[in-house]
Amino acid sequence: MLNTIDITDIARSQIIEPAILYFGTPVVLIGSSNEDGSPNLAPMSSAWWVGWRCMLGLASNSKSTENMIRTGECVLNLPSAELVDAVNKLARTTGSDPVPAGKINRGYRHEKNKFEISGLTALRGETVAAPRAAECPVQIEAKVAQVHKMAQEDEVWRGNLVAIEVKITRVHARPGILMDGQPDRIDPDKWRPLIMSFQQFYGLTPHKLQHSELGQIPESAYRPPGWRPAV
Image (cartoon, rainbow, N blue to C red; front, side, top):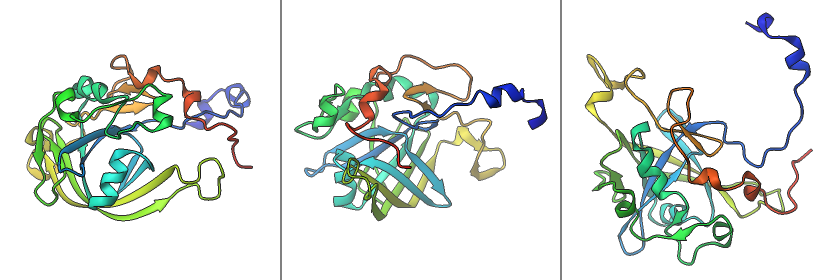
């Protein structure tokens, strides 16, 4: 209730300019296909859903972005909190060769065999050729519907970010997370997604799960030189 909040706490609110605004969203392992047909797998957390559509916020020069635009498809693999080790092994890796300059500055390295280094198992999609990650309790096959270039009015960010709308074509879910007696519903009491909040890993508990490799990158490294918030 609002009337239980100490008014002095409200008065102490201050204006800040965080380098990133990752307040907490589920981790998604995007499965895509490289030019030679080999599988690519990359973690991201800028995703949100409406109905059977999903919006993905990605860097324009990421390998996943290139693959999705070229092939028109992907798989959104949703890891549970218990897969945090596998996800962390993919941090600071990229399928791009050479590694983009911005990622070099954050300590990324090129890795071709993403499934191998993560210890996850690649399965072919049923409605797409992109790979599913067998260990993820939820695997969502999708086709690219629209690609929106972001921040076109911003001289610093222009050309660096895209929002990709995908339409879902098939959903795979492990039986253990389904609602009893309702096979088309995921039970939120059983589903424990891996959450990333300000580069740190969490489950649906108040405690951080473990050290995050991405958490070693200073947040300031995500702010382009010369960028200031619009007024």
